[in-house]
Length: 237
Image: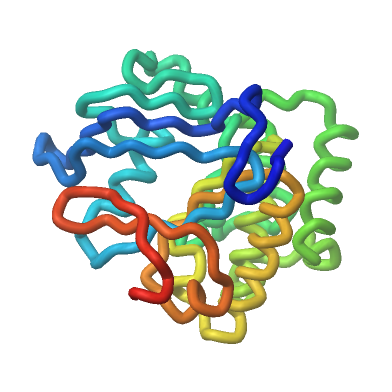
């Protein structure tokens, strides 16, 4: 629990802690000496120009890129020595939202979500169906469970993608430009949904280049620039 926005009870453990981390793409270091903590309920923007390392950082956090150097603990797992067989466990404990939705085009909404549950070890069909109904209701998409992805608007597809990220009840959600393919009005709807999810106690780390959203929904902001990650003030963007 929090004492206030700046003071935390000592026993509260961060969901994500980076200490002197180096992030690389194809052996080229893109970010160095990164230190960061993310706690339950945090909503943190990650900003920076294209190629500044935002996506590389997020990919490292869900073990799509190997950690180059340093200590990174994500939802209780160390990335410094994570084994290939443990990566699915890591990803079950975090939610990932992509810019391009990444829904399976040949399956309806329900079957997209069912595919993820089966892939992450769920067995009991009644519980799977119950979980799908719950997450779709959470994102106001419960009436669209039989729709195919191409029948949905961009905003609706992103809502389904967020529902997918919530399936395994993660405490940390990584969102990589989740409003990048959406119009301004729909982007605001998605932001309101993400903020609501954060207020329920989950932490969200969101990469974005849309500074207008940051001004409208201000929150802690980290910037990738010149190979570093540092905290910035919204008023200086």
